[in-house]
Length: 486
Ligand code: GCO
Image (tube, rainbow, N blue to C red):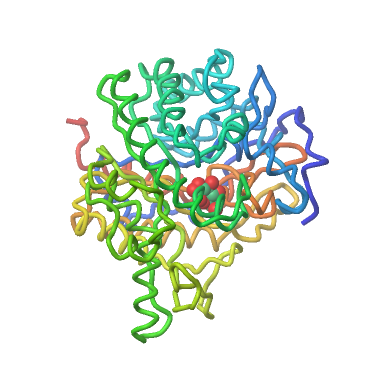
């Protein structure tokens, strides 16, 4: 697809058909889907992130972020796309909240752009930047949609990057200052706080693979970033608890069910190490177990000095854990240090447009493992969804049976996990809208709602209509079971 960024009209008026839900062949009552039996307190949401949807890149004194910088780097992002306009969400916020209400969502996960609140990362608070989220929270509450606020979804203020970014030992302190600024303004209305989104990804994609901002490639730095991120989670959580009355504080991790490619001892060992680096390296300390020994041995002198001892004394004090699940990982042994493990992509029956293997049972396995091995007491699926090569008809409607099936099967596995006793309290589809998919730019579409970027027209896809109908069927079942709502 050619770049849409150049032709995107920031001020395109909403077309008359914006956000229309059409009847689809899935509008049946869906009485049999296991997710309709989820408990009355279950949260049905969709998720987004600031840089991916907001636009308004310089509005009201917003500072630059590392993604504003990275997207300027030639070749860093497909088609040279940027988040300058994205879904123009800041200016279309009211309509977007109406879209959510039309889908029947009772929760919405979004992130705050740190550089809107503190343009230089620390110091002077930008009140007009905070106004943006103040308004969003009020609009959500008016529609009975519970705000799930993520403080950090990868857009570090560039001013802080210039002081060493997440690699600096000061990063946790900066983050706590930012958390306090947001909590002071929104803590009277927002109860659910996620400190960080996927520290694995911003540590390793941003500082080892270099395909995300800030585009660095250094193992030692990536491990330092991961360490500082864990510390930041804790001091950020403490700052929230000092300001917000009875908050619920969590973190969102990108978890993969890791499998060895072949049943050979070498591959099986590699899968254990990959699981260690992606999953246990973060889960173990957050649950008070310190860094896992096998990985400490593998990383050796790459680790920051004192990190292992610091994690012995650490606990994430999570009120909930957010699980972002997309795909399983297949692993084979490799000679490359320090992990001696590599991801492989064998031929499998189904992949999404990202090339990611589709394996819904992986979601249940991850959830069950968290309950069994870590004793997790409150879980949310904070992201789950898929990109496919959508084709819109002339009216803008997308009959995305592939995405609908992806969501259908993953939700069925989530519901099975609940039935087996897993404390899953909500599910957030990724994503509400087609949006800026990081290094892939606007080429990859994950939305329940199509965005025609040149006009900014929103059209609910068949998958979005199906999700709406599923939520409605769950509601009907609850009302039928308890007509007086006692
Ligand atoms: C993620 C990111 C999202 C991505 C999504 C699809 O948490 O990985 O939170 O921003 O867009 O995962 O890749």
